[in-house]
Amino acid sequence: MAWSCNTKVQLGAMFLALFGWVSSCVTTFVPLWKNLNLDLNELEIWTMGLWQVCIVQEEGATECKAHDSFLALPLELRVSRILMCLSNGLGLLGFLLASLGSDCWKICEEKPDLKKWLLLAGGAAFGTSGIMTLAPVSWVAYNTVLEFWDETIPNIVPRWEFGEAMFLGWFAGFFLAAGGLLMSHPYLTKGGLRQAPAHRRLTRLNYNLCSHYSVC
Image 1: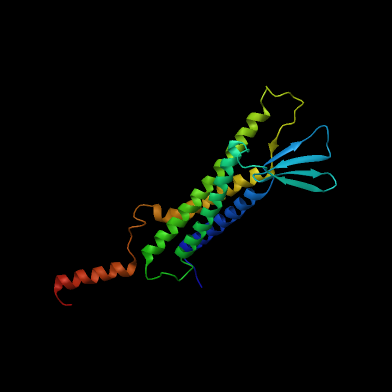
Image 2: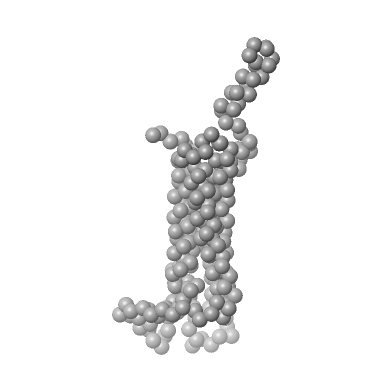
């Protein structure tokens, strides 16, 4: 089956956004947002996520403990929890909408305008999901940098540093946003949503000819 260029673009955008969504889900739940190396005990590495804190020992053993209270967390972690969960749900919704609106599916073929709007809504959902992933990751990164260079804290006090999940979150947000933009771009151009299907234009042309010559 030969696919048109537009269908290939839709598939590429879908896979790009899907990879970003999966990465965003992983970022949400892994306890690798921050790392803390203790100079007094180099055999242990502390890691922190949105849901728990873990201690990784040199021999490979890992012990994790969930955060005691949501309200006891810093503001940026509380907001990050909410935004990341919303981002994951919105990404799933975008995937469902974009799948129904894609040219690869034969659903609603008799309603091409509806398929265009479904695809556009899916792209918008992916883009919004990407922004909602980038915002909390960047906020936590900003506060981590401020605390790391805070001169009021004694130098002997260990400082939290960037964890692997933060970099994964940045990539996830960019992939989601890029996938959503690529998916919506053909219909955001001038006249993209207003362009009538070919069979509708032919029907209107035939009707005008028949009315003019009064032969139909």
